[in-house]
Amino acid sequence: SRPGWPGEVLELYATGLGPTNPAVPAGQVFSGAAATIDPVTVTIGGVNASVAFAGLTGAGLYQINVTVPNLPLGEQPLNVSVDGAVSQPGVFVAVAP
Image: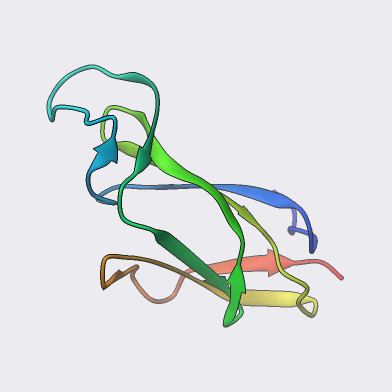
C-alpha cells in the first residue's frame, strides 16, 4: 500500500449505504453498478472530498470513488456519511504531499 496524493481518486468499499437506483433486491446475486439514492459524503482530514460515484457494485458491497483533497502529509481521518449515519471513528488515510 502507499499514500494517496491530493487529486488522486481512491476506491473505498462499504456496506449498508442504503437503497439504490435501480433497486437491487436483497439476497440476490448482483453484478453491475447501481447508484445510491441518498447522497454519500466523505471527508478526509475534515475537508469535504469530491464523491464521483457511490453505489452497489456487488451483492451487499458498495463502492465509493472519492478524490483526495489538498491536505498536508500524514495520516488523515476518513469519515463517510449517508442519510444521517456516520462511519465508525478511527479510520485513517495516509496522504502524500
